[in-house]
Image (spheres, rainbow, N blue to C red):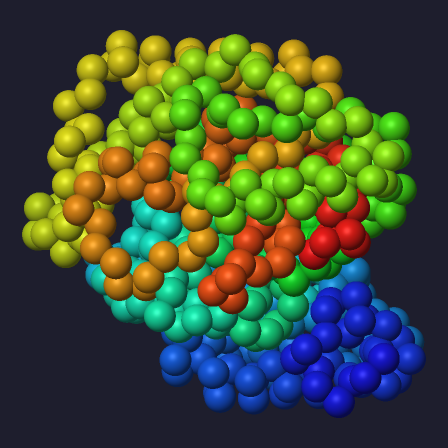
Amino acid sequence: MDVTDAAALDAEELLTAYAARQLTPLQALQGVTERIARRNPEINAFAVMNPEALNAARASAARWAAGKPSGVLDGVPVTVKDLVDMAGLPTRRGSKTTDTAPAPADAPLVRALRRAGAVIIGKTTTTEYGWKSPGDCPLHGITRNPWNTARTPGGSSSGAAAAAAAFFGPLHVGTDAGGSIRIPAAWSGIVGLKPSFGLVPQWPLGAFGHVAVAGPMARSVRDAALMLSALAGHDAADPFSLPGAPRDYLAGIEEGVRGLRIGVLLRPGFAAPVDADGLHALEQARLALREQGAELVEISPDLPDISEVFTKLWGIALARVADTLAEDQRALLEPGLLAVAERFRATPGLEVMRAEALRVQAAHEMAALTVDAVLCPAVPHCAPLAEAPVPDPVAALWQNWAPWTFLFNLTRQPAIAVPVGVNAAGLPISVQIAAPLYRDDMALRVARAVERAVG
């Protein structure tokens, strides 16, 4: 293994190099920060850097020198999305309406990262309150795609995706309420896992708390599994946090797909758009899984129109965000967010309850499928231009941003975006793999099989 460019190494490779004394966490941090200094000015992936990262790397280096690493990520550089509280740094949520004061305490997942020994190098950019898929916000401006800086990396976990693709560390925390991990992962050519709801504890919960999760973004499926092993686990601060002992999500990940029954989903409750690149990526993954011994079958679950269901829940959540702000603060919100909030703020309570009932119906229909995993597109097209106008955000939500991702937020299933190559323009193409609720291990296992074959 070549360790001369530490920033180019995955998390597993860094840990192997630390154990072999080929590299130290200090050297890894130096390699990453040097790359950030060179490339971040054009990419704009960070909301704020962590001034304590150097001390954390020194402490980790001392532990490795003593042969006593403290956790599964000891010394690995990671980032945290700026929707998540980290003690000592502000949580700005991409918005001029937020407090500049440092957060008083760590969110549960940040505590988990510290216990695992991770070196948190900074907080990454997000769209304002995580509301949309293009990767810009009023507070920090435009985050750009390292593959082509004229393009967006996607959002709302825009900085996390861009940082992973630019080799600003191997592991990154994103959040996902309708596709905000998987969309930027697909547009940025990385791996992004939306875990099962409740698996990774969160607090405080945002406006999308009933469907949103936090999860890993990385350059490989194995690194995503490694990070999930550190993030997952019960925390009493989150009332939805699942009980259970910590587990190693790398266990069984190389078992392959022989004998598995995988459903190919072409209609997720409505006529979701997908272009020729997306269909090509889907066919590549389908052939790769079949060649490895899986049975591929087309599935047609009896789903409600989930584009209508999710749009309503999304719009109501944004109305809630706006209504928590004073009038002078609301004027600072991005016009598109404010327009959606105004459109949905008078939604009757009975309509809200109907949308929630349909969400549960969709979850029931997906749970009734007799398949081990589901294969479908991740996004309707490759990364759009970073400065493309969005005249109608509501239409963009289900036409251009999240038509293939928000189903699995409604059903709360695990789902992962995996890159399978590039198109003729040199932009990444990806597929999405979902698994039954709480079978995150299966989603990772099938994704790893795709990655081995065509990633």
